[in-house]
Each structure stands twice: as C-alpha cells, then as structure tokens.
Image 1 (cartoon, rainbow, N blue to C red):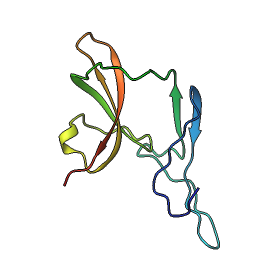
Image 2 (cartoon, helix red, strand yellow):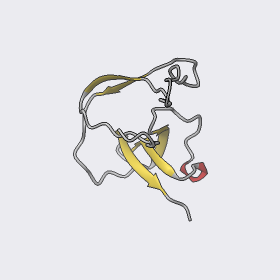
Image 3 (tube, rainbow, N blue to C red):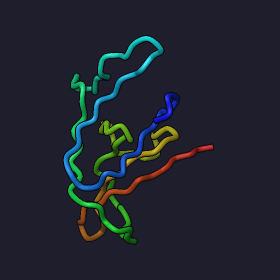
Length: 105
C-alpha cells in the first residue's frame, strides 16, 4: 500500500473482517487508532454482495464512512466530499446499500 494513501478498498468478499489502523513513521509505528466508541478495531460483517440493481433508496437509514464509522445522522446533503456507504429502504421495504461519491464544487 502507498505510504501516502488516505483511503483503502478491500475486495475480499463475504465474511467477517477485523480492521485496525496505524500510522507508520520513518522510525516508529503509532498505536492503533480509536473509533468514536473507544475501540481500537472495527469489525465488518459482509453477508452478501448484490448484483447492481435498479432499486432506488427512498429512505436513508444509515450512512457509513469508508473507514466503517457510522455517522449520527442520515442526511446526505450535510456530507462533505468523499466516499460513503449508504443503507436505506426501497419503496418495497427492502434494505439495500449503495456506495456514493460526493464531489460538491
């Protein structure tokens, strides 16, 4: 991974994954970064990967950053530029997820 990277994309698929983040300096490595809850890891459970569908999210239920942090609001209009995972309900009540990229100019 590039030492100057600020994002990470993992294509491992379905399963349970544990992520921990450190900063690596020239002569040392930091302790693990803490989540807002004070944990030094994030567990992610991927239960399935859907094919792209035309289902539209009509009600946003959760917004996650690409580092796995769940934001305390569900208003897409208040987000800064970046990549987010949006969970929401379709008109039929189906829970789906979408990755969005915001680039407000």
